[in-house]
Image (cartoon, rainbow, N blue to C red; front, side, top):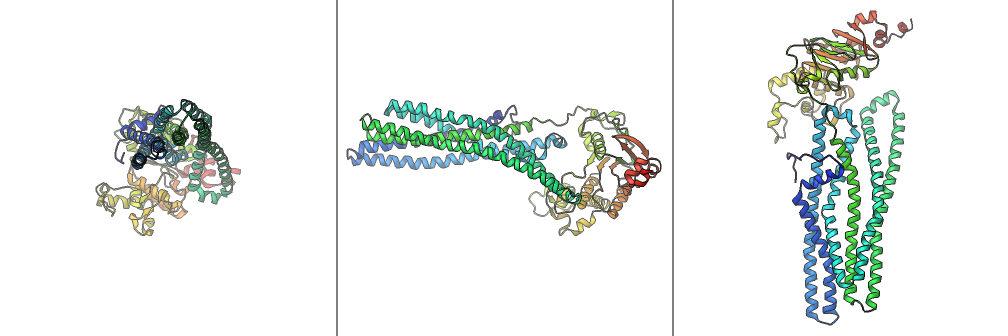
Length: 583
């Protein structure tokens, strides 16, 4: 079975059905073993009525105790062997499902890593979570068809052959009746696919909304928007519940017909066999065997219906996985090297020019405009931005990433020790089996202390029970919003990029802490290119250059005090000078 370090292979993402077949093809011998165990197990179930009929006709009815003991012993032996086969079938199919589960997880995680920063721009977090939590399990469950599903077909053919030796009429009824039952359930499976698809899509939307609520609940409460968002969530959850009822209604019919129709068919065939026995056309033992054969067929038919149900759901989930796997990261056609000396960044769309070695601020009437500019300057969205005399998209993406860092104030913080959350040290890779986190080297320790000091985050470390070794929850939920923001800033400063672009690095801080961070940030990044988006006077007062943006374009540039004196719109936005705006 696939392990954590094994290559999962290249998935077939042409369609949902081809993806399911790829999961089977990646473990052919195991799937073949599951099919063999399932087939022999079901055929021997069908052989049980035959052995019982022989025990009755050859031993019980004529009173031959030797024949009765012989056939009874054979019946016991077959039953014991079939019990072992059942265990092996279940064990093998569990391995098949687990391999498909782990393989799909590795494929999805690998694709998420491959997409990188382009993932949030192409697919919502809720849909990715739904794939990882629900779809993976459903896909693996659908592979049951390669074991009991194949066995059901083999058992059906074996019973048909046995019934021909008893009565061609009964064999014809069974051969024609079972496919009719399967066809009756078929339309429901198509309807189930449609309902399940809509349900999964709405589930992804609701999951994304839950994530947004969890991340911004404190802000919503402060702004008084908690009730409004709660009403929207309640409405969406009610719609999801109603869709779930529709899926459940179809599912209940599928499962009811999967058991009810074969049972009803069993009664019809038994009545027909009883009439033939009463007329003397078949023996009592053959009557018992016919009942046993048809009773055994209830299992294969139920398996067919169950497999059809699982495949229908598996196809829906596989299509979602395939759609995710078809996403492509931002194309990297760049072949040129990054500038060999400090150079200016320029965004023609807005007119923003970032001079090297300076602390520059972007102040926008609409914060989204400033964020869009950072995305273009960091080459996260296509643009005509240049770095020096070279277009950014002509430079190899790896070089852009190694020189330019975009630090989002809502970037992810992964669970682990605070030390690893800020920046894992090189010594960590040599201590995989140790329970004690490695101590950073002297130079690394000094760099970490400097980054924490620049972000005014030393008090966070001191307040934690184990300092840097304290285990943190995902997204550092055990810290306040301001503390998380300072940890993110410390992480960005520890990376020490040539060009640092940071969005609203102090928006969640109190005035005193914000002033401290602004002072230390300017000193820590002295001589290196740094860009911040902010409207805080405490930060703007410590910058070298400020670009004031209106409608996404540079309306004015200069120092903070120059713009306060010469640009009324800037003054209103930054100083909240409403009286001046009225005049």
